[in-house]
Structure formats: structure tokens, C-alpha cells
View 1 (tube, rainbow over the protein chains, first blue to last red):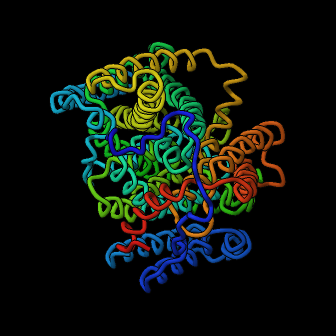
View 2 (cartoon, one colour):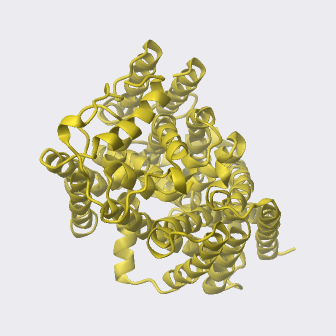
Length: 94
Length: 496
């Protein structure tokens, strides 16, 4: 530890010059095919577990599944699918 | 044997086990600050997994989640969304934090932010937020511990004595073995609490209803209001669902006791596997919690304090050994969070305050001993806060869950290269604005328009940070190249 931490003394001014600031390709946008698949699948599934889907759709389906409320079961299935996406990403080295 | 004696005996048996682990950890420890504070950055998958899940799930998850299902019904199953998000955040962001920590020797969250934004003011602001908003959790967990032991002993051990003894045990093994002791006891705590809540819920469901499916059937017949959104009291509105999802994922991950865990992983692949699998534990813990809460709503419909539904059911309907096993599990849930918060506060105060501003050039042994003294001081502060609560403390505790969330714009700015970077002035302005908004939206006018107050503060924080950053100087080109270049190499194996 210690020595490799950038040693900026307390109160030291920055000599930043905006023009010199290096630009990197955005990391928020996945660059590989597997990365895009994992991101899109996770976001799409996650949105199914968020309003308005939860309150306007899942909440209004009446039939029960194995004696359990549809809302509860459907959310459980979505959660398991999301874990599946994370495990798939791990196995593909994303 | 009487139930209280079995329950109290099992809790003390559990405490003895944690102390033994602390002593063994002490014998394995070297006099080195990284070893004491960061487990030597060598935490493997099993240890890291159990410490993360045990730390994430506090006494609230153990007792409070049952109370939430009891009061507000199935809406609390939203818990799955924030546990999944914690996994994804660990996978994507945690690995980046680990990489920067390893490359530049970071120990605390403030190290990361102050280095990139080149600002001691940012360091101080982050350290203050880190300590202020988590030290309050010591109070919450310590009060939970006092309550548990008071209930387990049937009132024979007072709340004050119970709180003090359990705080003392947590501080003792932390002082003895540092983060290694915390991690090893968390392994025990993580296994115990998971087994306890599942066994307890299944036994109660069989005893009272003939099984979990029959429990669900009876809830459907007798309390259908508990099985739809927004719940019987209208709590789980869309805004609250989204707000809790964000504040209880990002907001907890950005607390120092969780962020520091990312620095301790042995490698990035371990952290990715951790991210992919932690939701399995975190999410499935709420399945038995639903059985407890919903079943309790049928059997004990008039509880004054809903959070007491689990212990109340146990004392009335479960055998003594099971009650003891589960209350020891509740103790484990509270202590695993408490010891991690004590450790995180010790780390921040030792690293960001003492080493940075008071004695920058002391020996490793000196800092380890300073850390131990700080733990003892925190022990007494935590105890005093637990037994002498005040209106001001109540306000701060209300704010605490959303406080660390406000570090999000700054951390994202460091960990995701691309586009224009935030500036030190922008990050500071955003943090200051968000603290004011937090006070208003969590306390003065709670959750305006049905949206969680923490989200309002985060929105204002982000807008202010971006706006101010647009007109102020960014970090130096050398620092951006060094930090973002490291991330570019780590994630993509390229220089740009």
C-alpha cells in the first residue's frame, strides 16, 4: 500500500488542462457481442420486475400457480432468469 | 429445560465460537496494515461470499423483513430486485474498484475518489459521509442485539447489559484478528443465519398450517389484501418500489464496509463469480421471511410491533431448541453487520484521518495499534448511542440508508471512462446539495410524490455535479490517463 497511492499533498492545486485530458471509448456501452447480449438480457428482464410491469400487469393476473400468487411466482422466475444471465456472463468471460 | 435457558445458552455458545475464531485469526495475523485492514487482499471465494452476504443482511433482514411482509404483504418480494442489482453491481463495478485498489494501493473509498479528483476536500467529504452514515448503523445493530438477548432471556438480561456484552464481543475479536477475524466469524454467521431462518420458517409453517403451500392457500383465502400491490396500507407504490430497489442496492454497496470488501478479493474472477452468485443467497433468504410474515399476519394479527413477529411466533409455537437456534441466528445477522461497520469506521479513521493528517510516517505496528484503540472508542460511542437515543439521532438514522448512495456520481465518474469527466468541484457541489435534499425528502416532507427521498437527492446530486463540472477544471490529464488507462487495460486489455 502507501507508496503506490498517488501522493497528492493536502491542499495541492491541480494543474489540469482540459485540452490534454485523454478520451477513452465509453465503458458504459459494451464492446463485445457477449457483453451486449448479457447487458440487453439483464436490462430487459430487470424491467419486467419493475413498475409499470409489476403494478399494471403481474399484479392483475388472477390465476394462481401451484397455489401461489402469480405476482410472487412470476417475480421468482424473473429473479432466477437474472441470476442465469449473470452466470452466463461469467462463463463467457464477459 | 426452560425455553429462555436454551435460547440464552445457544447465543452464548455462539459468542464463544466467535471469540475462538478471533483468537485463531490473531495467531495467523502479521503486523501489517493491509493484513489487518484488508485481509492482505487474499480473500478467496467462499470466505468472501459468506462475509458479503452476512454483512449485507443485517438484523433488519432477519427480523424486519418478516415485519414488512406482515404489514405490507407481498410487495416486499421486491427485495429480489435489489439483491439482483447488488450482484450486477459487484460484477461490473466491484471488479473495477478491485482493479484500481490493487493497482494504486487504495484501502478506503476516500482513497479512490480523492486520488482521481485530486482533492483533499473530496477525501474529507467522503470520509465524513462514510463514517457519519455508517456509525449510525452501529446504533441500529447494537439496539437489535440488546433486543434479541432481552427477548431470548425472557427479560432476565436487560437491554443495556445485552447490548454491551455483544458489542464487547464483536470489538474483542476485531481487535484481536482484524478483518481476518471479521471474515472468519462472518462465515459462521452467514451459514448460521441462513439455516436458522429457513428451518424456523419451515417448522412454523408445518406446525401452524400443515406446510408452506397450505400457508399460502390460507393467506389467499383470508387476507387477499396482503397478496397484491401496493399492499393493505398502500406502501408499495411504483415510486417506492423503484426507490427501495436503488437505495438498498447502490446505497448499501457504496457504504465503506461493503466497498472495502471489493479491495480484499484475491482476484477479479473471484469477484465476478461473487457477483453472479450472491443474489442466490440474498434473494432466497426472503422466501422464508415471507412465510413468517404472512403466516404471522394470520396467527397473530394484532401485534403492536410487526418486527417482533418472528420471535413471537417462536416463543408461542416452536420448541425451545429451535427458538434458541434462531435467536442465535438473529444475533449472528446483527453481529456480522456490526463487526463490519466497526471495522470500516476503524479503517476510515485510521487511514483517512490519522495516517493522512496526524502521523503520516509511523510504522505499520503503530497504525495497527491505533486502529485497535479506535475500535475501543467506537465501542463506547456505539454503546452510548444505543442506550441514549435522541431526536437528532433518529433524524440521522432516517438519513443513513440513503447517505452512501450520494457517492454514486463520483464513483461512476472514476470507474467508467468515456465522455467528459466530473470535476472535484462538481462532485463536492453535488454531495453538498444532496445532503440538503436528503434532509427535506426523508424527514421534513418524506418521500414527495411517492418517490423515495434518496432518489430525489440522487437526482439533484447528479444534475448539480454535471452542471458544475461543465464549467470547472477536470482532473489533470496525467491522472485521468493513469486511472482510466488502468481500467481500459483491465477491462479490455487495450490502452485506448
